[in-house]
Image 1 (tube, rainbow, N blue to C red):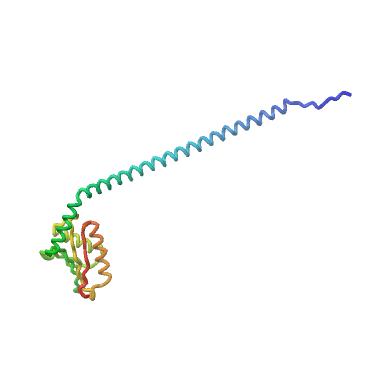
Image 2 (image 1 turned 90 degrees about the vertical axis):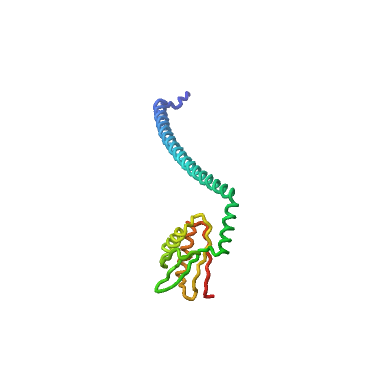
Length: 191
């Protein structure tokens, strides 16, 4: 007895395997191209973000350098600021003060005065209008934006309207953005 075994034709099977191998290689190549394109897009996006961060860092550094320079300049002249404050206090004791009087006729008016008399007046309206009137009066007096200015707001609390005091307070805050060393106290004469 002879065993004849199974005879398998390998050529057809090899053809199928080669076709499948070729198909897998093509898909891998397409996949590699897609991965490469995605990686390049991510690298480009990261480079753009890094450039933007670098620009923001440069701007922040410039602002920091400006602020340091300003503070160094201010540190060099503390005696000047102290001297100017002392002069303003001495002027205050001599009556050199800006006075703002709130008075009511038919409407509320704010009179701005110094030791020489009236500098200006403004109707009580919006805080912006009041601030513009105060600033115009201070400019009329020849005061510079870096001068030390001592001021007193005088009003009769029994007659003054709350909204008017609030508007004047907001106006004084606006004035302080222009005249950085503008100091104002409130005096209620009804107390």
